[in-house]
Picture 1 (cartoon, rainbow, N blue to C red):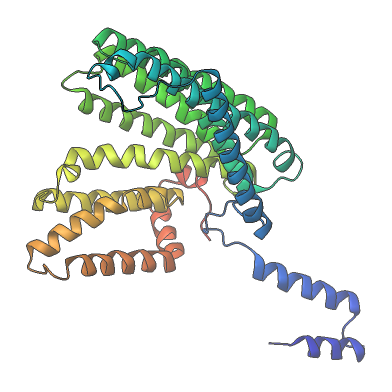
Picture 2 (cartoon, one colour):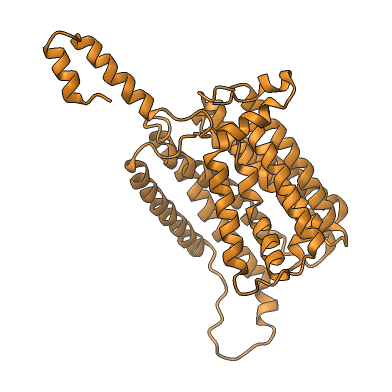
Length: 380
């Protein structure tokens, strides 16, 4: 190990040229700052200024939302009961006006937020290329567009019958599709990686809502059907994410960041239906068979995560594994320490996996067929 003084001394003595010394310093600095091949790197914060600007963005969006609500209240004030001359039918008589006022308030506030988010993105995303503020502005824009339409729908469809509820669900599906279109326009303008995931989520929401409308919002088997469809959609999004991943196996371009957010979207859509089918979401007493099934599924998720070098599946399934292990420790007599032991086992396993990710992944990828290995990110 040579210090800076040793290098300067070698330059002064003529044993090393100044150019070679500078090249050596540059090489060492680059090698120390380089992101490991399996670190699943993506841009989130480029500096503390990102956090500073993000705080300002959040405050600004909250302010314009409140201004939108105030303007809506001035345009169409909500009915107000002053407490005198009690009328038991007051709420029923004014429900339509209340729904309309609330819908206008929600729609106008969300529209102000969406418009402001786009305008702020013109500077902080298009010109400054700031990562975290760009993510927040995209989310604010997409959610704002969706909530604006939902507010309008809420103003005129307050339920009461199966037909009106079905129409409301269909309109929400149309709103989700419009949100997908708005997200596509945002992508074409600003090219923020998370936008593709937002657009995909809106399209997935459209499909699920149309299915709910087709089978009826009050159908007895609605939950089972929706979970099944969400699982299938999650697999489709996972495949879509892999397509982006396989186009940049070196993970050196924006395409890798797009894949990261798609994996983050697909993971809970795959994990939740699987564990709900096992019975983890039904309560604390899930049974020994279900608990061991959860652990087995988590192991499978771990192998997939290692193969594709994405940790989203493991993170999305953590809560279910915590529930299963807590149940197992309680069943085997560790009642008082069940949560502590569960946290200890999970924490130790995750840290060990993180420390040994590279060699374990090399073994997993090495066991795959050759053509499949070439499509996956290279092992470190």
